[in-house]
Amino acid sequence: MLRTILLGPPGAGKGTQADRIVEKYDVPHISTGDIFRENIKNGTELGKKAQEYMNRGELVPDDLVVEIATDRLLKDDCREKGFLLDGFPRTVYQAEKLDEFLAAHGHRLDKVIDLEVGEAELMKRLTGRRVCKVCGASYHIVNIPPAKEGVCDKCGGELIQRADDNEETAKNRIDVYNRETAPLVDYYEKAGVLARIDGAAPLEETFGSITAALEE
Figure 1: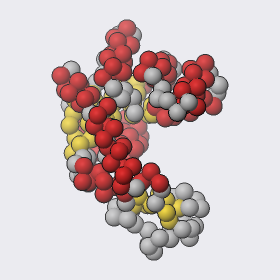
Figure 2: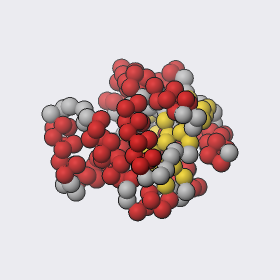
Figure 3: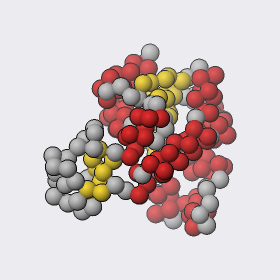
């Protein structure tokens, strides 16, 4: 049983490390984006409410985000195995509400993993991504380059830079994270559950540090 949260700015490698944590510890990976899509697709009351805000181009309010996330945590798989939260909580208010929810069910967080990566490295990672126009395969000009520049290894399609991977958008995504979500690092450090992990280290080394923190 493991109850943990994965924090880190865009480009820190949360997706890669989340996959490894899920595989090693056999816990459900709860991604906010996935829960929202699932609720909207299934036409649940919570999904309909969230869709209304999205249709107006507004942010889904904290209380509704908390309701959707905690509703997912009540499902059998989370009750039996715990969870890895990714993308929730995003604000200190959401974190406080999560703590209240867990306490009401006699639980607490085991550990909060914070992947730390400097801004220059984040920008390099975010702006270096390339995606195949045809099959959607993902590459990186430095970390995962294709065999032939600009051409997909899998289908031979053209590799493009997505609009949200340009420098201006990448900088904005990092700024939003620093403003809204970075305060959670202090919040969880004060709670005594934070583990700071070097997200700029090689993948295996980073994962080794994560498992050491989860098992201490």
